[in-house]
Length: 303
Image 1 (cartoon, rainbow, N blue to C red):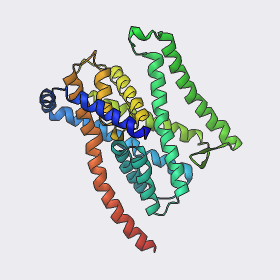
Image 2: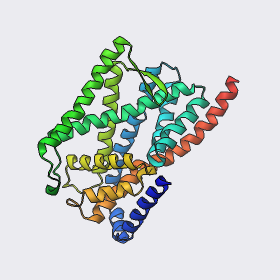
Image 3: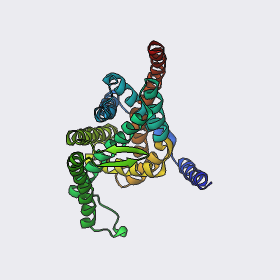
Image 4: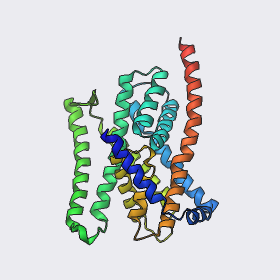
């Protein structure tokens, strides 16, 4: 009941805020994008999805299953696009389980792949956020009374978490450490696996930011954009609204209020949603249909 009330309250706030927006001006701003600008943003988005769609290849390496790499990538890419638009439980989990098990992978193996993918995604985020807070601490409102040294301290803590994870991978692998995550007994990845996790995830987050940056006015720095995007990502993860609908737009326009007027900020984030969320989602929906047909044929052949 509380969850329903919470989401009702969020939806009410989003609707009330949306009624105050000059949507005609936003539409004019969206129509003002050139094919070149949209093309650059789309290329960055495509490369970002290429990285994110490769997370499960690390899971293949980790679990030792022998499903073909192309099929693993296809399933991961479809699930990632669905996760962005429908939420992690529906997209990231349900579609992965559905497709992997259709091709004969045990649920227990799929669960370990999913857990590792979640760790992969947030490991890169933690690394980049730590570096950002340490070397480029954001300017917070004076009323918050948070000293810069405290912000840098949070950055150091986040980097220490990454360092501890890498150390645990080295020591834990040697000593056979395991931990239980969502009912699954997980052993520590090897150091090369952990390095691959950090590299892929970091590049994925950076490319996502580049895609958004390309759609915003030229005076904005990359650091300013990544600060806002990371803050929006935390808000979205905390609220669990499918696709971060309204949350992404509302939090981004609020965070960028000192740098952009509302029309510019909304046009940029809506164009980003189309390029990074909706276009890949449409492609994933088509891809999912093909995968279902292929899985049916695969099962008949195996049967």
